[in-house]
Image 1 (cartoon, rainbow, N blue to C red):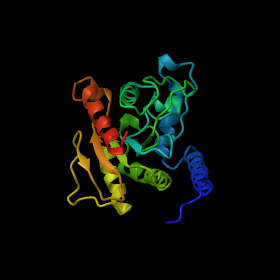
Image 2 (cartoon, helix red, strand yellow):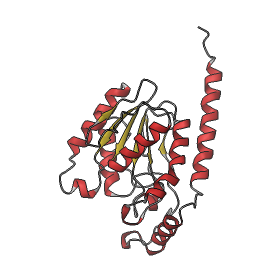
Image 3 (cartoon, rainbow, N blue to C red):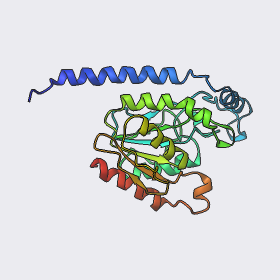
Length: 244
């Protein structure tokens, strides 16, 4: 077998990095869904009292992390005063606090807290995206908005070629991941697997393992439906699957 020179590998990775950066730059300029554009910008004017002096991001939120990562986390949508404010996936709200603590405990983040864009927080072998990239009213995107946003995550998957595990946070993210996977030729069983916490789907050797996980929303964490040990278990399993 002929080995590929390191320079060629580096060149390929560099080309993908350039393409990924270009994709994210295009993403943050998207204004396709009028309802979402109006809502994200209205929130940036009204603001929450605690963030009255903050400049809200109020644009589509790009992927957080390394496109060479082996773990991809798929959420639902940015939080109204979290990601829509900070411009970073899950950063700035209670859901993110839970997620980042778990990622740190399981070796996927360098620290358990992420307060703002330049605080030194870094994901390790992980990336975070979402099925809808603008904050929706009542945290409920429509099916049309979900489908309009799908090409962004599909293009990210085209460029994130090392992904071995996808953790889908919540039923909508899980179902959309299966839907996108089926379009990509992944071997998704029929009938479609039902979402539950910790459910695993193995869609063939050429596709990543998909793990369902309750979303770390306050609706789940305040009620005890999701506990930190339950969340840790999912990401410990993900770490095992990628060999960390």
